[in-house]
Image 1 (spheres, helix red, strand yellow):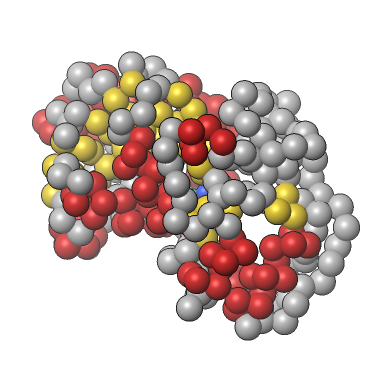
Image 2: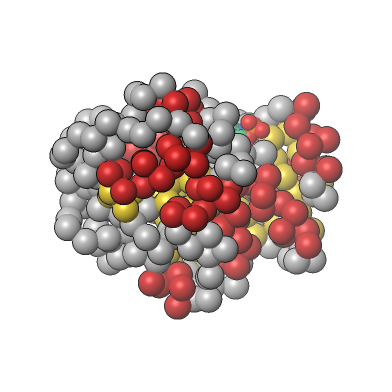
Length: 283
Ligand SMILES: NC(=O)c1ccc[n+]([C@@H]2O[C@H](COP(=O)([O-])OP(=O)(O)OC[C@H]3O[C@@H](n4cnc5c(N)ncnc54)[C@H](OP(=O)(O)O)[C@@H]3O)[C@@H](O)[C@H]2O)c1
Protein backbone atom coordinates (compact mmCIF):
# COMPACT_ATOMS: atom_id res chain seq x y z
CA UNK A 1 0.00 0.00 0.00
CA UNK A 2 1.08 3.59 -0.53
CA UNK A 3 0.73 5.32 2.85
CA UNK A 4 0.91 9.04 3.62
CA UNK A 5 1.96 9.68 7.23
CA UNK A 6 1.08 13.09 8.68
CA UNK A 7 3.00 13.43 11.93
CA UNK A 8 5.85 11.20 10.75
CA UNK A 9 8.47 12.89 12.95
CA UNK A 10 6.54 12.70 16.23
CA UNK A 11 7.02 10.11 18.96
CA UNK A 12 4.65 7.63 17.34
CA UNK A 13 5.57 8.51 13.75
CA UNK A 14 9.26 7.77 14.27
CA UNK A 15 8.43 4.32 15.60
CA UNK A 16 5.73 3.69 13.00
CA UNK A 17 7.67 4.53 9.82
CA UNK A 18 10.15 1.60 10.00
CA UNK A 19 7.30 -0.79 10.87
CA UNK A 20 5.34 0.28 7.78
CA UNK A 21 8.42 0.02 5.57
CA UNK A 22 9.29 -3.41 6.97
CA UNK A 23 5.75 -4.57 6.24
CA UNK A 24 6.36 -3.76 2.57
CA UNK A 25 4.47 -0.48 2.27
CA UNK A 26 5.57 2.54 0.27
CA UNK A 27 5.66 5.32 2.86
CA UNK A 28 5.65 9.09 2.45
CA UNK A 29 6.28 11.08 5.63
CA UNK A 30 5.30 14.71 6.08
CA UNK A 31 7.07 17.38 8.13
CA UNK A 32 7.01 21.18 8.29
CA UNK A 33 10.71 21.26 8.74
CA UNK A 34 13.19 20.72 5.85
CA UNK A 35 15.81 19.65 8.41
CA UNK A 36 13.67 16.60 9.20
CA UNK A 37 13.63 15.33 5.60
CA UNK A 38 16.81 13.30 6.11
CA UNK A 39 15.48 11.89 9.39
CA UNK A 40 12.39 10.59 7.59
CA UNK A 41 14.44 9.19 4.71
CA UNK A 42 16.79 7.45 7.15
CA UNK A 43 13.73 5.59 8.46
CA UNK A 44 13.15 4.20 4.97
CA UNK A 45 10.39 6.54 3.76
CA UNK A 46 10.09 9.29 1.19
CA UNK A 47 9.68 12.74 2.70
CA UNK A 48 7.83 15.94 1.88
CA UNK A 49 7.59 19.34 3.50
CA UNK A 50 4.04 20.55 4.16
CA UNK A 51 2.10 22.30 6.91
CA UNK A 52 -1.25 20.90 8.02
CA UNK A 53 -2.60 24.46 8.32
CA UNK A 54 -1.72 25.21 4.69
CA UNK A 55 -4.93 23.85 3.20
CA UNK A 56 -4.00 24.33 -0.46
CA UNK A 57 -0.53 22.89 0.11
CA UNK A 58 -1.91 19.73 1.73
CA UNK A 59 -4.53 19.29 -0.98
CA UNK A 60 -1.83 19.61 -3.63
CA UNK A 61 0.60 17.25 -1.87
CA UNK A 62 -1.91 14.46 -1.25
CA UNK A 63 -3.43 15.01 -4.70
CA UNK A 64 -0.04 14.36 -6.30
CA UNK A 65 0.86 11.38 -4.11
CA UNK A 66 -2.58 9.72 -4.32
CA UNK A 67 -1.95 7.37 -1.38
CA UNK A 68 -4.08 4.32 -0.58
CA UNK A 69 -4.26 5.35 3.07
CA UNK A 70 -3.57 8.36 5.26
CA UNK A 71 -2.13 7.98 8.75
CA UNK A 72 -3.04 10.92 10.96
CA UNK A 73 -0.50 11.11 13.78
CA UNK A 74 -0.50 14.92 14.03
CA UNK A 75 -0.37 16.49 17.48
CA UNK A 76 0.93 19.82 18.71
CA UNK A 77 2.09 18.96 22.19
CA UNK A 78 5.72 20.02 22.25
CA UNK A 79 4.84 23.32 23.93
CA UNK A 80 2.18 21.83 26.27
CA UNK A 81 -0.62 23.97 24.79
CA UNK A 82 -4.01 22.26 24.75
CA UNK A 83 -5.29 25.12 22.56
CA UNK A 84 -2.59 24.48 19.93
CA UNK A 85 -3.33 20.78 20.10
CA UNK A 86 -7.08 21.37 19.68
CA UNK A 87 -6.34 23.59 16.69
CA UNK A 88 -4.35 20.90 14.90
CA UNK A 89 -7.06 18.38 15.70
CA UNK A 90 -9.76 20.65 14.26
CA UNK A 91 -8.13 22.54 11.38
CA UNK A 92 -5.33 20.09 10.64
CA UNK A 93 -7.72 17.13 10.49
CA UNK A 94 -10.21 19.08 8.38
CA UNK A 95 -7.54 19.89 5.82
CA UNK A 96 -6.12 16.37 5.82
CA UNK A 97 -9.53 14.73 5.39
CA UNK A 98 -10.60 17.14 2.65
CA UNK A 99 -7.31 16.56 0.83
CA UNK A 100 -7.77 12.79 1.16
CA UNK A 101 -11.33 13.00 -0.18
CA UNK A 102 -10.27 15.09 -3.16
CA UNK A 103 -7.49 12.59 -3.95
CA UNK A 104 -9.93 9.66 -3.75
CA UNK A 105 -8.32 8.19 -0.60
CA UNK A 106 -10.71 5.77 1.09
CA UNK A 107 -8.83 4.86 4.28
CA UNK A 108 -7.62 6.84 7.29
CA UNK A 109 -6.09 5.76 10.60
CA UNK A 110 -6.30 8.58 13.12
CA UNK A 111 -4.75 9.20 16.54
CA UNK A 112 -7.18 10.06 19.33
CA UNK A 113 -7.06 9.69 23.13
CA UNK A 114 -8.60 7.31 25.67
CA UNK A 115 -9.23 9.86 28.44
CA UNK A 116 -11.99 11.85 26.70
CA UNK A 117 -14.86 9.73 28.05
CA UNK A 118 -17.69 10.79 30.33
CA UNK A 119 -17.04 10.38 34.06
CA UNK A 120 -17.60 6.89 35.47
CA UNK A 121 -16.40 4.31 37.94
CA UNK A 122 -15.10 1.65 35.53
CA UNK A 123 -12.45 1.76 32.78
CA UNK A 124 -14.31 3.05 29.71
CA UNK A 125 -15.20 0.85 26.76
CA UNK A 126 -15.63 2.42 23.33
CA UNK A 127 -19.43 2.51 23.86
CA UNK A 128 -19.13 5.15 26.60
CA UNK A 129 -19.98 8.60 25.18
CA UNK A 130 -17.31 11.28 24.93
CA UNK A 131 -17.39 13.89 27.70
CA UNK A 132 -19.11 16.60 25.63
CA UNK A 133 -20.53 18.27 28.76
CA UNK A 134 -17.02 18.90 30.13
CA UNK A 135 -16.29 22.38 31.47
CA UNK A 136 -13.22 24.45 30.52
CA UNK A 137 -10.32 23.83 30.33
CA UNK A 138 -11.08 20.13 29.57
CA UNK A 139 -13.70 21.26 27.04
CA UNK A 140 -10.92 22.49 24.72
CA UNK A 141 -9.49 18.98 24.50
CA UNK A 142 -12.89 17.30 24.10
CA UNK A 143 -13.96 19.71 21.33
CA UNK A 144 -10.73 18.93 19.47
CA UNK A 145 -11.23 15.18 19.83
CA UNK A 146 -14.87 15.31 18.70
CA UNK A 147 -13.92 17.34 15.62
CA UNK A 148 -11.01 15.02 14.78
CA UNK A 149 -13.03 11.83 15.13
CA UNK A 150 -16.05 13.16 13.22
CA UNK A 151 -13.90 14.40 10.35
CA UNK A 152 -11.93 11.15 10.11
CA UNK A 153 -15.21 9.21 10.00
CA UNK A 154 -16.14 11.02 6.76
CA UNK A 155 -13.80 8.66 4.87
CA UNK A 156 -15.40 5.29 4.03
CA UNK A 157 -12.69 3.29 5.88
CA UNK A 158 -11.71 4.93 9.14
CA UNK A 159 -10.08 3.52 12.23
CA UNK A 160 -9.83 5.83 15.24
CA UNK A 161 -7.18 4.78 17.75
CA UNK A 162 -7.86 6.15 21.23
CA UNK A 163 -4.39 5.92 22.71
CA UNK A 164 -3.54 5.77 26.38
CA UNK A 165 -0.94 8.01 28.03
CA UNK A 166 2.27 7.35 26.13
CA UNK A 167 5.52 6.37 27.77
CA UNK A 168 8.79 5.14 26.33
CA UNK A 169 11.51 6.75 24.18
CA UNK A 170 11.17 10.51 23.55
CA UNK A 171 7.89 10.80 25.48
CA UNK A 172 7.27 12.97 28.53
CA UNK A 173 7.91 9.87 30.66
CA UNK A 174 11.36 9.19 29.16
CA UNK A 175 14.25 9.85 31.56
CA UNK A 176 14.77 13.29 29.94
CA UNK A 177 11.03 14.02 29.65
CA UNK A 178 8.97 16.56 31.52
CA UNK A 179 7.19 14.03 33.75
CA UNK A 180 10.52 12.58 34.80
CA UNK A 181 11.72 16.06 35.78
CA UNK A 182 8.53 16.73 37.75
CA UNK A 183 8.87 13.40 39.54
CA UNK A 184 12.52 14.00 40.43
CA UNK A 185 11.62 17.52 41.65
CA UNK A 186 8.80 16.15 43.79
CA UNK A 187 6.25 18.25 41.85
CA UNK A 188 3.93 15.38 40.92
CA UNK A 189 1.57 14.14 43.65
CA UNK A 190 0.20 10.59 43.58
CA UNK A 191 -3.59 10.93 43.38
CA UNK A 192 -6.52 8.52 43.12
CA UNK A 193 -7.07 9.43 39.44
CA UNK A 194 -6.89 6.40 37.12
CA UNK A 195 -4.63 6.45 34.05
CA UNK A 196 -4.31 3.93 31.23
CA UNK A 197 -0.74 3.87 29.94
CA UNK A 198 0.62 2.75 26.58
CA UNK A 199 4.16 2.13 25.41
CA UNK A 200 4.96 4.05 22.24
CA UNK A 201 6.00 0.84 20.41
CA UNK A 202 2.57 -0.65 21.12
CA UNK A 203 0.91 2.52 19.84
CA UNK A 204 2.84 2.30 16.56
CA UNK A 205 2.13 -1.39 16.21
CA UNK A 206 -1.61 -0.78 16.58
CA UNK A 207 -1.46 1.83 13.78
CA UNK A 208 0.23 -0.71 11.50
CA UNK A 209 -2.34 -3.42 12.28
CA UNK A 210 -5.23 -0.97 11.93
CA UNK A 211 -4.63 -0.88 8.17
CA UNK A 212 -6.42 -4.27 8.12
CA UNK A 213 -9.11 -3.50 10.69
CA UNK A 214 -12.71 -2.59 9.83
CA UNK A 215 -13.95 0.95 10.41
CA UNK A 216 -14.49 1.84 14.03
CA UNK A 217 -13.05 3.18 17.25
CA UNK A 218 -10.68 1.28 19.53
CA UNK A 219 -9.01 1.98 22.85
CA UNK A 220 -5.30 1.23 22.54
CA UNK A 221 -4.15 1.03 26.15
CA UNK A 222 -2.27 -1.44 28.31
CA UNK A 223 -3.91 -4.10 30.48
CA UNK A 224 -3.72 -2.32 33.81
CA UNK A 225 -5.50 1.01 34.35
CA UNK A 226 -4.07 2.31 37.63
CA UNK A 227 -4.37 5.13 40.13
CA UNK A 228 -1.50 7.55 40.65
CA UNK A 229 -1.07 6.07 44.12
CA UNK A 230 -0.20 2.77 42.39
CA UNK A 231 1.82 3.75 39.32
CA UNK A 232 3.71 6.85 40.47
CA UNK A 233 5.77 5.10 43.18
CA UNK A 234 6.74 2.44 40.60
CA UNK A 235 7.68 5.11 38.05
CA UNK A 236 9.68 7.07 40.65
CA UNK A 237 11.56 3.93 41.62
CA UNK A 238 12.35 3.15 37.96
CA UNK A 239 13.78 6.68 37.71
CA UNK A 240 15.70 6.30 40.98
CA UNK A 241 13.78 9.36 42.14
CA UNK A 242 12.32 9.97 45.62
CA UNK A 243 8.85 8.53 46.25
CA UNK A 244 5.90 10.88 45.60
CA UNK A 245 3.65 12.66 48.05
CA UNK A 246 0.16 11.19 48.26
CA UNK A 247 -2.86 13.42 47.69
CA UNK A 248 -6.35 11.94 47.89
CA UNK A 249 -8.96 12.81 45.28
CA UNK A 250 -9.20 12.78 41.48
CA UNK A 251 -11.09 14.21 38.52
CA UNK A 252 -14.29 12.19 37.94
CA UNK A 253 -13.25 11.49 34.32
CA UNK A 254 -9.94 9.88 35.32
CA UNK A 255 -11.28 6.34 34.91
CA UNK A 256 -8.88 4.60 32.52
CA UNK A 257 -10.00 2.56 29.52
CA UNK A 258 -10.51 -1.07 28.52
CA UNK A 259 -8.49 -2.69 25.73
CA UNK A 260 -10.83 -5.72 25.37
CA UNK A 261 -11.91 -4.73 21.84
CA UNK A 262 -8.37 -4.18 20.53
CA UNK A 263 -7.24 -7.48 22.02
CA UNK A 264 -10.18 -9.17 20.27
CA UNK A 265 -8.89 -7.67 17.02
CA UNK A 266 -5.52 -9.35 17.63
CA UNK A 267 -3.52 -6.44 19.06
CA UNK A 268 -1.14 -7.84 21.69
CA UNK A 269 0.85 -5.26 23.65
CA UNK A 270 4.58 -5.96 24.00
CA UNK A 271 4.34 -3.92 27.21
CA UNK A 272 1.12 -5.22 28.81
CA UNK A 273 1.59 -3.24 32.00
CA UNK A 274 3.42 -0.10 33.16
CA UNK A 275 4.37 -2.18 36.23
CA UNK A 276 7.24 -3.77 34.29
CA UNK A 277 7.18 -1.41 31.29
CA UNK A 278 8.47 1.70 33.12
CA UNK A 279 11.61 -0.07 34.32
CA UNK A 280 12.14 -1.76 30.92
CA UNK A 281 11.85 1.53 29.03
CA UNK A 282 14.03 3.51 31.46
CA UNK A 283 16.96 1.06 31.39
N1 LIG B 1 -1.41 9.79 23.89
C1 LIG B 1 -0.44 10.50 24.45
O1 LIG B 1 -0.18 10.47 25.66
C2 LIG B 1 0.45 11.36 23.58
C3 LIG B 1 0.30 11.40 22.17
C4 LIG B 1 1.18 12.17 21.42
C5 LIG B 1 2.17 12.90 22.05
N2 LIG B 1 2.27 12.83 23.41
C6 LIG B 1 3.36 13.55 24.14
O2 LIG B 1 3.62 14.79 23.52
C7 LIG B 1 5.02 15.00 23.41
C8 LIG B 1 5.29 15.72 22.10
O3 LIG B 1 4.86 14.90 21.01
P1 LIG B 1 5.71 14.73 19.68
O4 LIG B 1 7.14 14.58 20.01
O5 LIG B 1 5.06 13.68 18.87
O6 LIG B 1 5.63 16.17 19.00
P2 LIG B 1 4.46 17.13 18.46
O7 LIG B 1 5.01 18.49 18.53
O8 LIG B 1 3.19 16.88 19.18
O9 LIG B 1 4.38 16.75 16.89
C9 LIG B 1 3.85 15.53 16.46
C10 LIG B 1 3.92 15.45 14.96
O10 LIG B 1 2.96 16.35 14.39
C11 LIG B 1 3.61 17.10 13.37
N3 LIG B 1 2.98 18.42 13.27
C12 LIG B 1 2.61 19.23 14.29
N4 LIG B 1 2.05 20.36 13.79
C13 LIG B 1 2.07 20.25 12.42
C14 LIG B 1 1.63 21.07 11.34
N5 LIG B 1 1.06 22.26 11.55
N6 LIG B 1 1.82 20.62 10.09
C15 LIG B 1 2.42 19.42 9.85
N7 LIG B 1 2.85 18.60 10.83
C16 LIG B 1 2.69 19.01 12.10
C17 LIG B 1 5.06 17.17 13.76
O11 LIG B 1 5.84 17.36 12.59
P3 LIG B 1 7.04 18.44 12.40
O12 LIG B 1 7.27 19.08 13.75
O13 LIG B 1 8.19 17.62 11.90
O14 LIG B 1 6.50 19.37 11.39
C18 LIG B 1 5.27 15.80 14.34
O15 LIG B 1 5.54 14.87 13.33
C19 LIG B 1 5.65 13.61 23.47
O16 LIG B 1 6.86 13.65 24.17
C20 LIG B 1 4.61 12.72 24.10
O17 LIG B 1 4.98 12.32 25.42
C21 LIG B 1 1.44 12.09 24.19
